Picture 1 (cartoon, rainbow, N blue to C red):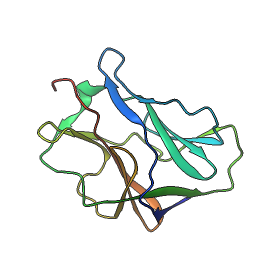
Picture 2 (cartoon, one colour):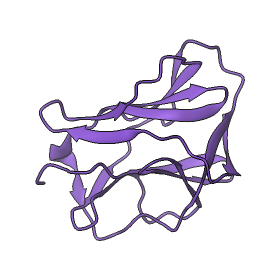
Picture 3 (cartoon, rainbow, N blue to C red):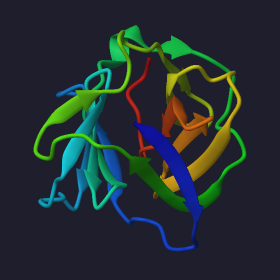
Picture 4 (cartoon, one colour):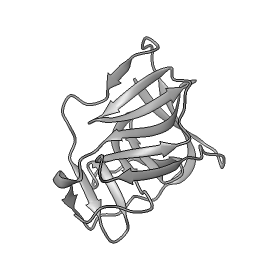
Length: 149
């Protein structure tokens, strides 16, 4: 699968929250039309019409690594996925779980490498993906509040 970015001022609007008692990210409204799901660690990226439109799933905060790194400069747009995958199934993006970092000062959580560069796009409110050469680098999430780490 290959990720691409389409610049757009119109991004998906969703309210991303972190539920500490469930150790998970949750987003409203829930998307019911799902073509495929892409899995990053235990987070699900919902893909509809080849566009990532929703993020949710388990992300235990006790293993988060503190960092002073911040989300890279990003633009607003659409995160597209070029694929020939069978609809209705979930597919892992990485073979192994990626490390999860948190910047407690800014409230950003990074799944992946916070130092690796690429093109960054805010594809849903407070959800930024970083890609390079079409591949997934990291996912940055900023809910309104986080548990103390």
